[in-house]
Every structure is written in structure tokens, then in C-alpha cells.
Length: 256
Length: 205
Image (cartoon, rainbow over the protein chains, first blue to last red):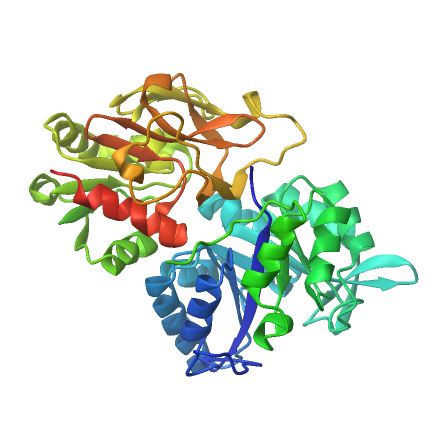
């Protein structure tokens, strides 16, 4: 049976992980390579790297790091941040990324998803979307959630999936950072609208929130989180063991 | 030395790195001489079958890979590379494969319930059946590996060495003599994947 995926997300700026904290056995908490290895050894099913660097030098550093991660960690890697053109896809795929996540780039250039899917295959193109309720309607937000595009979210997601997005990461701005649980209503609406894998993001504060996510929405494929993993509030191995005990299919990594 | 066949499809970065991590030297090559000199050959592949099969044939590498495999050199096809080992594929039309393994490639939509998502993407457990193939000697029944595919190996019962359950029993790996194929990506399957690659590299050439 296909397992549900647990995905830690690492924001990288100027070659360093933002929000790194102390883990036992980890010498450099803001080293993307060390943190990625730690997560991989603890059972992460996939890693997402967001490049939040604005400078050209920072971008070059990011691809160097990506290459190093891909040389040492052998689980699927998704890369996002600053993906605006098919050339950007090419740049990160050559460095070992398996999937490329587009967000604002797809909003600015509505043909990007289709062009990239045609060149690299649907499985390579991940649509990432920041969604917030405005007067009871799900709206797509751009620029890291600061700007309301006015687009209705479900139809935007459907349009991108039809164009070739092979997976969708739904980040609820309403629940993000609040740590009161995933946005089940929003995620359910997306899962009902598309037939590609949907990854939940925004709101995870404890193990119980993941249990609720997978139990409430059987068609959701994965849960993504950043700070609760980075701050050590939830250990991935504990999370996966607990979910497995609840009957949710998990890949359990045997140690040794 | 393991030769990874470079015929212009797919991303070979992770594949090379994964072999390096288990201490095996690789060369990514489109040179028939290098393929002939290698101890083992890996046939990777992503994308569409028809396009990949054509590229492999047009480059002249199909002929070399088949000749080397028939002469007994261990060959491992991965993902689309596994599908290419079969006689033919029904992915958007009908396309001939390398014919090294009996069987054909068909859409998983034909055998799985309609409510399941396509592609079959993510980590799924391997099942070996009654006998465990040497390729899996370092891993356990039920270990998970990473899949991404919409087509599967069909009518290949006698060469199936592992299956994965996804609304149906899908072919996860095949073997016929010195020719092996994995539908999943060992190079993306963490420790379990590395153990499979190690077993492939340790097989007597």
C-alpha cells in the first residue's frame, strides 16, 4: 500500500538554513546538508528546499548546496523559490532536484507550468499555492502571501493541474504559523477538485494534527511542515511511529 | 566499473552519486566501447517510452546494450529503463522495446480502481512472494521504495521478482538471468535503495 509522506521543508538563504536550531548530534544546525541528512536518517520521505535568496551570488551558492545534498542524500528532493522560467527548472534539475515547485512564477507566467511539464514531465512539476479566505472565498495570494491576486484558488489549482502540474502543495495562510492544525476544510476542497497528489502545508503544531489530517482526508498524500521539525518540537521518527500505530500507512525506517 | 547509459533522457546526477556513495565507480557514457568494457550496465530513463526507445535505437546504443546483456553482462534497467527491457509498450501507441524480458508495458489505469491517483507516486512496500531474489538479499519483505510511474510491466509473470500493491499487484521488479529491472527508483529509495544497488554490484559478472 502506498504510504503517506512526511516532508520537512527547509528555507535556505545565502547558503544557510533559516530558523535552524539545536539538535543532538548535529554540529551545524544551519547547514542544509547536515540538516537534510538528519531528517533523512530520521525517516523524512522527501525534502523540500526553498531558496529565499534574492541575490545572484546567493542563487549560485544555493545550487552548490543542492548539488552537495543530492550527492549524499538519496530521497526525493523538491526545490522551489525563484523559479520563473524553464531555464530555472533546468538549473535546479541539473543539480539533482527531482521535482521543481513553482508559485509566483506560475502566476506571473501562466504558461510556465505547461511548458515545464512538456519538457520534463508532469511528475517533475509541483504547483505550490498560498491560499487565504477573503469574504468566505479561497483566494490565491502571491509574493509570499502578501498580495491578493484576486484569483479563486480551486479554479487556479485545477487550471494548473490541467496544464501539467503533477502535484499540488496547498499552504493555508489562515492556519500557517498558528499551530492549531492543518486547514482541513481548504484541503478537502482541493482534494475533491483534483486527482493529482495533494500535500498539506500550514498549521501543524503537534503529532495529533497530522493524525487528524490523514484521518479526516483519506485522499491527502502528504503533510509538510518546517518549524515544528526545525525546533525539535516533533521528531519525524516519533511522528511516523505514532501515525503507523493509528493505522495510517507509513514508511518506517529501520535503524541499522 | 558500472556504465550508466546516457542516451539523452533523464537526470543522471543522483544515479551516479548513489553508486559513488556505496563505493562503486561509475561512468556516464554514450560510447559503445566504454559500455563493452564496463563490468555492469545501468539503463536509466524517464519520460515517454516511444521517445526513449527511439533515442536509444537511433544512437546505436540499443544494439550494444542488447548484445552485452545477451553475452551475460549484468544489466539493470530503472523505471522507464526497466520498461524498455520488455518486448513492447502500449504507451501512446505501440512501440517495440529491447525484448530482453518477456512481457509488455501497459497503463496502470487498466488494472487499478478509478479512485486511485495516477501516476503511482510515493513510497510503497515491496513484496517478494515465495522466493527472494538475490537482488534483494540485503533488504526485507515490506521495505519501502520510491515509485513514480503510470505504466507497468504486464504479462511478465515468470520474471517478476517483486510486486507493490496499489489497488492491484503491480510489477515492481523483474529479472531474467543477468538482466534486472526495477520499476521504482533505487537511487531515490534511501538506505533500502542503496542496498539493492550494492547487491546488483556484487553479483558475479
